[in-house]
Length: 199
Image 1 (spheres, rainbow, N blue to C red):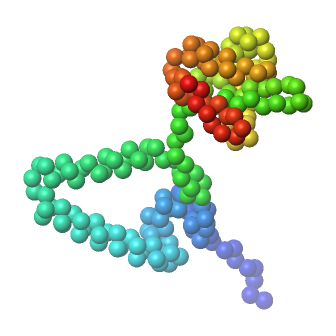
Image 2 (image 1 turned 180 degrees about the horizontal axis):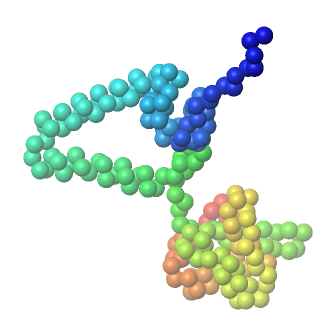
Image 3 (image 1 turned 60 degrees about the vertical axis):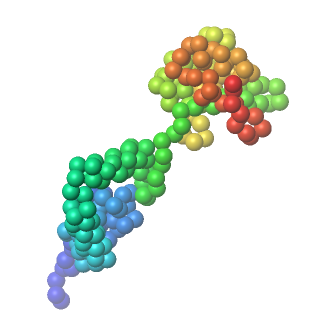
């Protein structure tokens, strides 16, 4: 007998904390690439090739930009695209799996839902995008319209305000008066499955 079997040593990525073989299935493979090139090049040889090609392209672009733009105007024009790409990165949020999520539009959506054939619930979504605390807003709405109002998570896992009763048309004027940060042009109704502007 040769003895006890030895444990397998697994190399874990310091970025995503997955084994190096599974980094490509992790939340953000782009961040893991530099670490993989330095620590596990044998697992992803195509990354090494891509990195070398990118470096060669960067060097050639730098050489071309030095040769073409020696004046201050050329340097300013070459700096502009960098600023636009950084502003685009601010508008985009990365989700697990590498999916990209854009920032939401600032709009308030009001929807009337009928339950039990007689009871109505008015749902207000999007007030939090204007910096309004939903708990305070639900208290104010409940007092103003003398009904029950509560903050609940909607089907998209976002918080919304449920107000008992059909107050959908009265609520627009109240929202614009109480919170001046919310313009009337940013308030929409959902009628028959279509988004209709309130104004």
